[in-house]
Structure formats: structure tokens, C-alpha cells
Image (cartoon, rainbow, N blue to C red; front, side, top):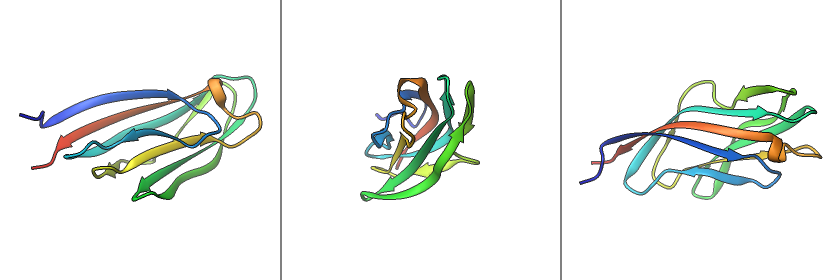
Length: 113
């Protein structure tokens, strides 16, 4: 029997490649509770994030500047991801956020009946 509700924390480094950080699993709807990107580097970086549905990106935030030793929230509220929807993040500047940028997601996965 599938778990009805499951809270998860996902972490990843941010690079210049549009990486899919999280994809809602088959049979589940996901509520993204928090999506925060931190800059642990020594210069200001820009970051973008997209919601992906059916391969089509929709911008959540674009070229947001993150000062040194600071962070931004990609979402101002919650985001619902249906099965196969994804969250993608990438750095936009040269040098990009790279290993000095990290994203933290807090999600709630709920099994679909």
C-alpha cells in the first residue's frame, strides 16, 4: 500500500544548466512548501526557476539577483505539482552560481486515490 502523505527535503547544487531538481512521482500530487536558493559564494549571482508541465517551462522567477551570503525564496506561496510536473533551477550569470549556489526544497507528496 502506498504511503498517503510523505514530507521530503530535497537539496541540490545550482549550475548554469537547467537542471530538474524535482519531478512529482507517478500517482502523487506534490505541494512544494519551500524553494530557497542560497548564494555561498563571493559575488552576486542571478538565478532562474521554472515549473515544467508537458515539457513546457513556465517561469517562477527569472534572473533574480542573490547577494553574497544571502538567499531568496523562489516561491512566494505554495506550488502544486501534478504527476510528472517538475521544478527546474539554473544560474544565469558568468560565473554562474555553480557550486556556490544551493537549492533546498521542502515538499509534501500525497498519493492520488
